[in-house]
Image (cartoon, rainbow, N blue to C red; front, side, top):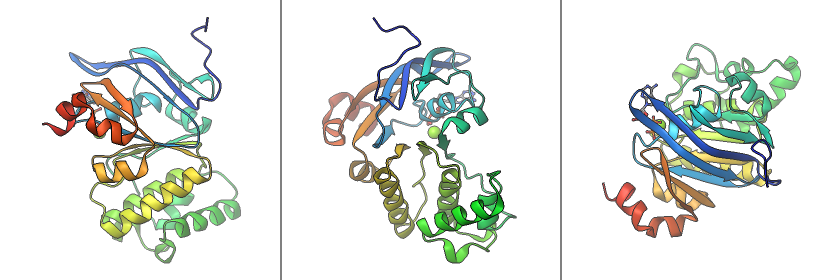
Length: 242
Ligand SMILES: Nc1ncnc2c1ncn2[C@@H]1O[C@H](COP(=O)(O)OP(=O)(O)O)[C@@H](O)[C@H]1O
Ligand SMILES: [Mg+2]
């Protein structure tokens, strides 16, 4: 039998029976899920179904009330956000957190303690990665909303995370920049990275994700390939039906 501190080989992230409540609200309810490396996963569910709270519990921003989180076989629940980041998990926020008074390039340089040359080279690579290189010296505050979201996305990549959690990265982003973002996510996967993305646009999710997890009132009500999920009556009721 498996002990509670062991996990199966081959999993990058495993969440077991995670729960988080805020007063009387159960934001995440006994949620379990497993991510294998090198794949793109989607996390969907109605507003308030616990998606962001789940991200917050994984990344140490919120303390879970119950359950366990394993990353590369080690417990990470209970770690501080910077410790989780250091283990190799990066995340973006639903609300943009770039520094408007710094340039695009500076926004990337401030998140690393690597030697300047190394950081500078990586920052420029990443700006090219999402076609923002010509805007590197522009103040982030002058960039469009979509460009700021792309900047926040590559800022997460500065630390070369193995697992990338994206909280609604496509919301409010125009078609051109969205395609840039989706192509970049796919290239990351091709490099062996793992991505878990919260996204409402089913067309985006269907085209991008190998597997979806569906939350409703904090509970995982379904998981599977997008085509199967879209036809699941419980999901239709919870998500598409409202
Ligand atoms: N810091 C908080 N304090 C109190 N309630 C919260 C807090 N964060 C989230 N919630 C509640 O938890 C539930 C899940 O919210 P959230 O994780 O933001 O959902 P989603 O990201 O799926 O829209 C909601 O009912 C929300 O109101
Ligand atoms: Mg949210």
